[in-house]
Image (cartoon, rainbow, N blue to C red; front, side, top):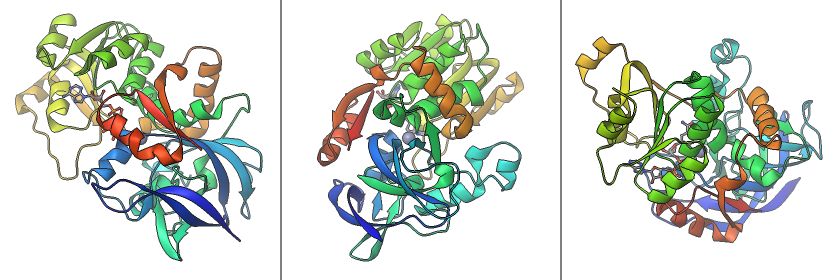
Amino acid sequence: MAYRVKAAVFYRPHEPLAVEELELEAPRQGEVLVRVAACGVCHSDLHFMEGLVPIASPSVLGHEAAGVVEAVGHGVESVRPGDHVVLSFIPACGRCPYCAVGRPNLCTVANRAMSRGTMLDGTPRFAKEGRPVYQMGAIGGFATRTVVPEAGCVKIREDMPLDRAALLGCGVMTGVGAAINTARVQAGSDVAVVGCGGVGLNVVQGAALAGAGRIIAVDVLPHKLELARQFGATHAVDASREDPVAAVRQIAAGGVDYAFEVIGRPETIRQAFDMTRRGGLTVVVGVAPAGAEVSLPAGAFLTEKTITGSAYGGARMSVDVPRLVELYLAGRLKLDQLISRRYPLEGINDAFDALRRGEVARSIVAM
Ligand code: CND
Ligand code: ZN
């Protein structure tokens, strides 16, 4: 059986997404049909639309979603119709070498599906007049319904509001996870976060949850710095008015223990490295344009600094998502304040324009 769905389809860079009807195939073995409740608007999707990062086309974008299970394919055991789920854009296989050593965010099978824009078997479930339409992160969340791998479904409590749960699917997991899972920020340590958008604000709140001492927010927009203070930043640096490296080094004598880059540009990655103190850790969260390179001062290696990336906040979704839900319901994780605007699916291009102009912390498309 096939379903008719409404979805936002990416055809080529520098063009608006087309909101149109697609066919959606029923879930195959090990797959789940989900009615999407909400999907967040992340800068990674904008990178595809701006042609900075390649993606299969046509494809349904959207990788920060939550919804309700409507049907399951053969062999699905962990969820059933009616369950509320957060979707994971890295549906880890559980068996590859990365999964086996406890690094499911690096799963070989899921990352291959991600680069192809398909389900785990190499085919997508959306189609337009019989021709395949790919799905970002084995999700394709800008659609009224989608089919995802069972491993991409994380069951959550039904008293968790689904629109806020959607944010856990990328921005919150990526940001909080970068601080807690990747960097393992120590209580009392000094942190700088370069870029305080939807993901960076969550690095700020992840550092606050970990008990960091100074949390220095760096952005070029004053209202982002104001938001960062609400999320736990103790200091703010406006990089459009002063040299952010000098400013951070002055606030945290000699630099910070952990610096996070959450934009995706070689210049700001270099800034984050330069504001990291001797022996400290630089974490690159931002996704840089395809082919971009970063240069680092070779002499700095003598200072035993470490630089690493963070993919999906080092997520172990089945563990981390329920924890984040509990923190939210206990009033310790800010999600309401992240949602600056809500758009209908028809307004999705306005949502991306607002993101491009830096107007929002996060927008969600509510189906
Ligand atoms: P968003 O656009 O919301 O935030 C970017 C922020 O950076 C904005 O507040 C800007 O004002 C700010 N900014 C821009 N230029 C500068 C500058 N020169 N100095 C200081 N601040 C600046 O984007 P987002 O938060 O949705 O995403 C941020 C990055 O994270 C982006 O590259 C996205 O693709 C990436 C990401 C990575 C991962 C992962 O798994 N590593 C997952 N999702 C998104
Ligand atoms: Zn994202």
